[in-house]
Length: 260
Length: 248
Image 1 (cartoon, rainbow over the protein chains, first blue to last red):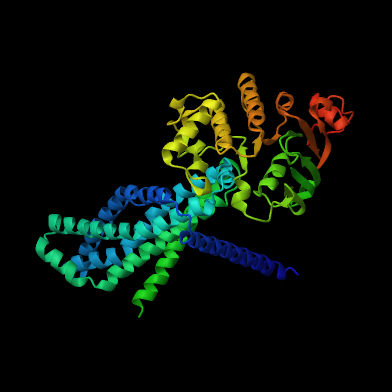
Image 2 (cartoon, rainbow over the protein chains, first blue to last red):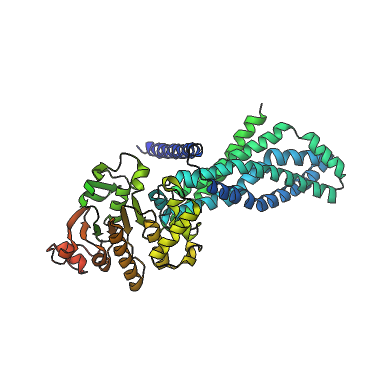
């Protein structure tokens, strides 16, 4: 019996995890189904596009430019150990577009947008605004969830694209400004080295990470417990879940695109 | 006519409603009283379908509320929430006209705004409040905006959840009078939950006391003081001693 109790605890934990995965999957499916069925709330979608896309540009831009710049310095100093300093443009480009651009933008969106969505919806729940929506004949999944998830699916790939370009520019600025690279040669090497699949994978990752970030924010917000503690837990849980799922999805998508 | 028959609801081991039977005739104002945590709000949410009862039947004009067109059902209701539940991101007039800006009751924006301002005026708020955000209003003003929203689409049935909680006695009196006036002039069926006895006397035609998950007593408000029910007496006179445990 003593030996069986850890197994029982493990079994319960696995069952709880599977139940949670099932709930999130059903929630995501419901969100997608509401995206394609009327009524559509254009104003809510517009607000979500601005909040998730436009207002995230500063943090995405700053993150990308510093990362690209630091990456250039690292590759230059690391490459110098085996006389490979010249690969800075290529490695910055491939590193930003394939990996760092989508992942960092995804994590920034998880920090900025997921937390904001979860806190907003959770607050609406504890102050009975969600119940009020229902009594006003408005489906919260349609009015609150579907526009946010759709907006993230649309706008995060664009943010990733912008982040990729700014990151490459960060590397370019450091390389040409302090590492002695020729500007025209740097740009030519960058463009020549990147392949369409690199860019496609970056944008697909952006779409997936955007969907994960918004869905987690909405899910934890809608499932929030009572009071300030409930809102706090929902916010914290949403960011943790979004960050872990983004990193896991990144691994799977990288495998799917580049292990061929 | 709203009728509840043997309605029960439990949250885990906590049996909140244990077979509630209640009738609310059309055009009357029913006030549900009872201590905190006795399930008054749950009862109201069961009628609206915000909470699903474990058993029992709730009918509206003989029709089971769980069957039929849900939007059409909800379109007959207005509700004032305890904390007003105004949407923070929308200006006051859009809160009031929420139902008139979307769905089957949708009107042109200018007309919806006009109706919203008229309803705001009805609850004693000036038109300059219309473009402010809910966070810029006092608690009493928020309650009045919530009331304006509840009546904006001229519903047949209005629910009031603790309409005077958190308000000073003067503002509570204003809200009570408004509720009574609006219910009378609209001819609406009203259901209010409260433990404020001043509200009960101002708003109610009939009173029902919820205790132990069942309706302990129900009758006209005029008979409440002489109900002879020890639970009702203890509650309405605010006695610490009696059949209701003071520490729950």
